[in-house]
Amino acid sequence: MCAAAGLAVVAFPALAPAQLVPILRGDVEENVLGLPSGRPGRAGETAPAGTAPAQTTGAATGLPDPGRDAAADATGADLSTQLSGPSLFDDDEAAADGEADAIGALITGSVDPFEEDEPGFGRVEAVAPAGPVQTRAVSDETAPYAPLGLRVGTFDVTTTLDLGATYLRTTTAFNDPGPPAGVRETTSEGTFGEAALSVRAGSDWARHALDLGFDGRLPFRISGDEDQSASFGADAALRLDIDRDTALTASGGYSYTQDDPGSAAVFEAIDPIRFPGVGTANEPVVQTFDGALTLSRQAGNLRGLAEVNGLRQTVGDARLSNGTTIPQDDLDYTRYGGRLRGGYAISPVLTPFVEVEVSRRVMDERPDTSGLDRNALRYALRLGTAFDRGEKLSGEVAIGYVREDIADAALADIAGLSVNADLRWSPRRETDVRFGLATVTTTSSAADTSGSLIYAANLGVQHRARANLELNGEVSVQYEDVVGPGEDTVTAAGLVGATYWFNRFMGLTGRVGHERTFSDDPAEETRSSNVFVGVRLQR
Image (cartoon, rainbow, N blue to C red; front, side, top):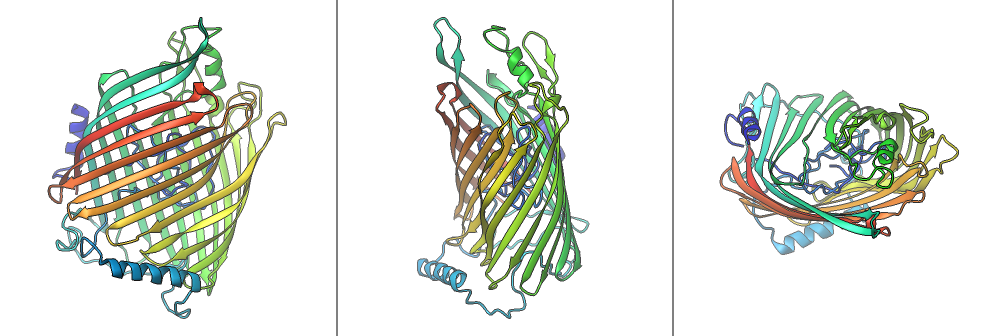
């Protein structure tokens, strides 16, 4: 508890709150569902470029919110982002009219095509510099519980912190060699203290923009045999406004997490038949570095984007219960590539586009422990459309084909349909809905398995029931299509939570989550439930 208290003192000279939004287990490298960068995926995992970035401070649930795009990460995309408005409830008739207007305009494009400030990706608009205020101007009438923020030079900084306790219960199936042989279940549970810190800083400049972010989570066991590990991530994005229609954006991120060992050498060393009683004793550290350089431009109704990006992931050594240490260098890799997107605005609302992506994965060790060369060339072609009706309805959808050609002829290539979406809808004031789809390819360390094609979907809702009461919910589904002899799996997760604010700086928060994995192989099924209660501080 001392670590959490120390973290609170350093981060907050005065009181302040935060939001933990758990996501599906098995993060992906790139923020594909628009959730913050800073969280790595599993070894060899590659997300499609062009998807909205995302950021999470995973809670004990491990619910997956599909990953950050190295191309356009931001991440964030916390489904519990605070909403504000001049009233608590909309007039129903006005809300219905507004929705009808938005949908009608989306279909017909009935907006003045010569409107000077038409929306479109890549356009840069200068904003007037803010005055020398020390805190962000927040209206007490419209948002009485919104964070004030802190003025640091030309940056607006907001900080949130969750302090509380989590109860976690997990049931895992496994093959028991016997006698008698069969599938058994083991259950573990534990109670943890938890501190989760999120810091955001955004520039307030007349031209250009710089955004910085940090998210960290520090759990510590109070009781039980369940285990949790610390994680943190940082990201930055600098946009340079070359002219009114052209922008150059440089972005980068770093994440630190711990995950189960995944090397084939580890699985061989803990084989229950050859080495009974031997298991893993640690969760190796996974570090991910990523970056991208993106040039976007619009000329009349034409829209264009070009990007180069790269990612580096390393995995630490695995330690076994018999004291043996096994390196996992065969999981380390570097990925680099690029993407091109071209679009045409048929109206101020709709911009159809075509996108091409190419990337290459280079493994540190070739061949790997299984004697296979897992270098791969990945390419994708997508057709989609972006649309923008302001806060009412915005986002993009795309469908296409993705293929990962693996260098070793003994491994089948990974290929299939690619679907991606990032939609934001506000059906009425004080209610925010977000829907995401992502397609991801991952590699494997098993000798007879190429990897997987993963489809992930996420739906999140947040509603402000009263000025000081926020409600949120989230459901996620992930389907993993294994290319090889392994069984496909489906993981479903759900979460409901609420935050009650005592004042602008402090509130009571809680959530309940459940996750379950289904498989044709009963030994691969798991289920997990968790409850969190704590205080949220914000500044």
